[in-house]
Image (cartoon, rainbow, N blue to C red; front, side, top):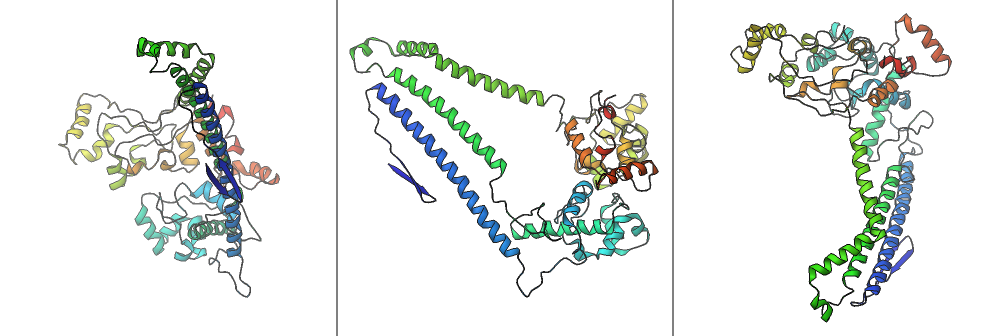
Length: 464
């Protein structure tokens, strides 16, 4: 007998001794014990949910108490960002900044934004976001330092963002770092009187509920499997091994007879068929979801070309080799003469460079293996996304400047593209084509004009 006590409730489970001879008693008692174990496990999981909920409620009350201002004192706020709307800043940051900057100190394409309002004044930050190139050209010391550290990549200008929206981004960055420093994370949705407060959900997350249900399902399947084993063992012990009958029947013959009886059992056949269907269905679904997806594909190329060396160490601009990325449907693979602009002198004797020479002498193109390949039914235009949309190469291709061998980092599925269209803001500043559409959009009470609002989700845009 053992006891499990939690939240003032005591569960008592009694384990009976199993008789060693009577097979029917073996089966019945094992079934009872299995059911008791299942009930006890379910009760423990339920109590775990209750305990988690109570603990989260306590943490929520503690977090609110800690975040409440002390009477007679004034809470410190980030300089220049106290009037920023962190909720709005979060939306703008995720749609425009998150692909290149982290809210912490980690460097992505650009520097991390941890303590940005401590390094620069809010007025400087506003000017930089509005016109980075102008700040560099003006000779601003910090702007030039950023350019030297991250060139040839320069941050895109956002002249359409208001001062209040930029302050909101700074407020969101400060909020995210304050939550991380407090160990409680950030509550990105709760907002009280223009200031944000950290809070912990008082209910277990939906993901935890899914795990709980999955565990219970697995326990039921294990119970079914154990019941089948009990039935088999019961059939095997029907004959006493010490009896004269057992001595006259060979072991393998008895095993064969019992296996035939088990195969003829309708319950066993149903369970085996169900298990087979579950495994086959899971494999089929995984296979169908993987059709046409080549994420992680990194083929061997005819010439060992390192993007890490050329685009990373030597910082050669992507546009130098892929000349059509700003004006054509495809980025195009560089021709041999582009390679020879440098390698006519540099490392001309290298075995890999000699492959380029042989291709030129034979007047044959280099047979590069395409890595990123969309199906023919999908239309994609590089110039539209890079030149008009202002996307960086890394947003779709990953950190290409760190790849020794290029691989497909993104899934490039339709869902992946649609998610981007739903989250990306349209830069309509100074483009009269969008003036009427922006006015209609704002008249409906909507703040940000997304790509999805200008037909980005219409089938005919990509499938023609």
